[in-house]
Image (cartoon, rainbow, N blue to C red; front, side, top):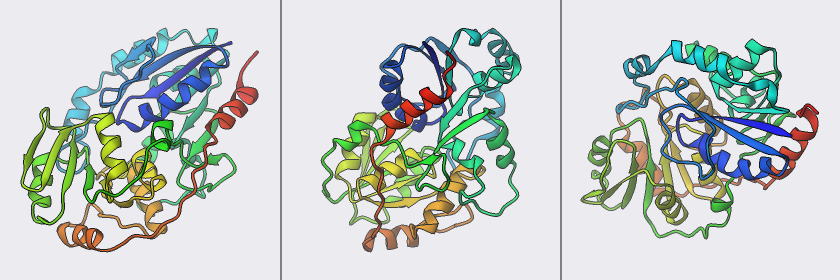
Length: 329
């Protein structure tokens, strides 16, 4: 059996989840990996057969998407060329993690593929989402169209939705509290975060930044370039995680029973939905309209947080069910 696993390369969550799923897919046959996008800091250890430009949202430095750089990064001619050149008919199973080139190529060539992603969960109307008019809704539904859907979310909102894939390297961590707070906000410049966190001098902050190439310290704030191993260690030993409205990062913090505070990116509808879902569980959110973040952060730091999430290790069973149901023989 030949399997194609197509992965979105924007952000680190898709790649992090893929590192857990790839060895499971390899048990069922010959696996080729396709990655498109330009914004991931985490890398795969397995060889990538198709490295495509795709279409990525570029993180800004003020809490949202940088629309101008995103537009400059677009290359529709290359997108169309890559889409036409993919030899999809040679595969028995095409698995898509919100990757647009292979999804649209399947649609063009009349080939079925199955989405295995957090975004697939939004095919259900039962998933919490804010009642706002947002162009991001259209992007979420049209960005990587597939026929079949297997989704992941913070809760089992529907029959095809499962709880998050927690990587083995996270499950195997020893969770303890050494008193510091970890921050990963890729759409905010680290200098802005330093200015904010130094106003709480009694708290030690470990900041992981997409925008700094070197590590440095300013007062009670330690800044590091994004590094998977260092971040995992910081997360395992922190008191709480302050992060964006992504999915995998908050899920891992909740699994490790850490305090959680999220600030979803502006102009990113999926993150708004994730934050809205977490809000339903009573977790604090800093919305884009909030001007003064300091009181919310101070309250979060000074008070305990109680939550109970159950994220069992079901990934192998989910992959087995998917292969049996959707592979063409």
